[in-house]
Amino acid sequence: MKILILQLDIAWENKSANHSRVLEMLEAASPEPETLVVLPEMFATGFSMNVPAVHDSETHETESFLSRLASDYRINLVAGLVTLGDEGKGFNQCLVLRPDGSEAARYSKLHPFTLGGELDNYHKGDDVVLVDCGEFKLSPFICYDLRFPEIFRHAVTCGANLFTVIANWPAVRIEHWITLLKARAIENQSYVIGVNRAGRDPFLEYPGASMIVDPLGRVIAELGPGESSFSAEILLDELAQIRLTLPFLDDIRPEFV
Image 1 (cartoon, rainbow, N blue to C red):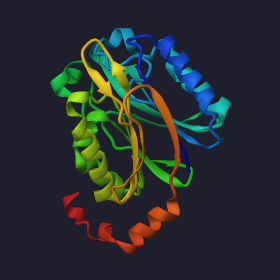
Image 2: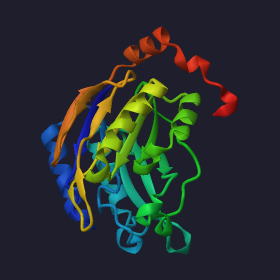
Image 3: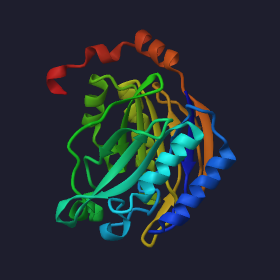
Image 4: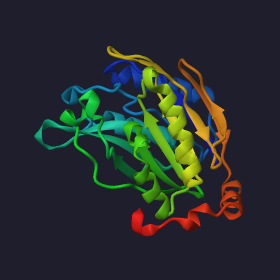
């Protein structure tokens, strides 16, 4: 399956500007039909705690934009957005869309980033999500989720072999990002696609470092700092052969998952 990563320098709380930039980058990349295109966490607004200003539950403008992109380009699409829950809190979500523009899955971040005030403004999600994506079984996660290996392991025991991790991961902890993406790939013998933002918001600097890691922990494609994109291909046959040759997952103790 072909993969296209769009690493954005997100304009702060400016949906129209970010929508326009994504469209420009997608037009320039010209992905083949059925490509899996992945955008960062909260790509349309940045990692804002101002839920009333950034949620999509009234206008649905970001969701509609993503649906049009998927159908116009005939792509699979993974991207972050905010919806409104009760008590004025939001849900930090990852939307997975099919090439006809329909919703394939919607994942709500299981672990809001308490240290950054996210838990004060966003609800916790309830479930790990699995969805068919081409020939792969995809499980999407968001940023801080990467620090919790048990949810990735649970997804693998349910059949996942591909993970997306969309993020606003700051430069100050970028070595954690790189190390944990590799660890999640190795321990679950799965492809991991990590898509981070670039640039700055009012509070932090973001170094990009988006990458694709194969089931042996090898980085097969990566980006440096700054707004950019790249394409790569992942192979289900290669993953299956790795799991057959090194059948580590067979030794999982399900009573501890």
